[in-house]
Image 1 (cartoon, helix red, strand yellow):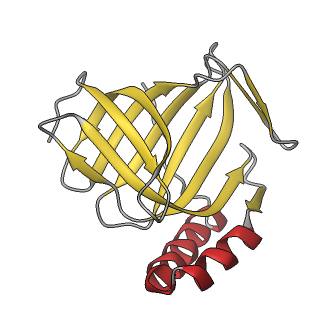
Image 2 (cartoon, one colour; image 1 turned 90 degrees about the vertical axis):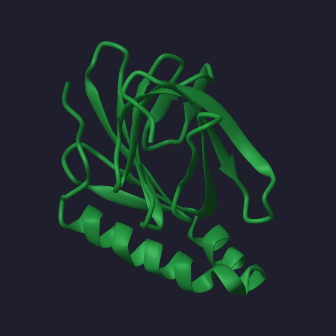
Length: 161
């Protein structure tokens, strides 16, 4: 486990094991259930239509050792809560020695507005992944179902300082 305040390097992997993205953060909590970290968005602008991410946005990232999803709580640099971005993926893995966290992304994402309205993203990519990686299908479907139940019930995690 890593102590609060420890630096951490996150690697988002594709199902074939190649790296899709990487970024750095700081551990807020790390325990038997998972890890929570804080990171700053490091791209100038990403406009998704339903929301926009900007350099400096604050991501509080919740990863779980035994759940097929992760959840990012997103706020503007001034602290205004913007919503949650959640990813279906394999459970996160931590190498405490190197300070590296990695997870395999399974394509399906969910954006949830502060009022609870949500949109499911990348369904076609998810369906393709299920046919191309049959060995991941059960875990992917379980992660999707669990994440959507969490979103629909309004029980997404929320970090408060």
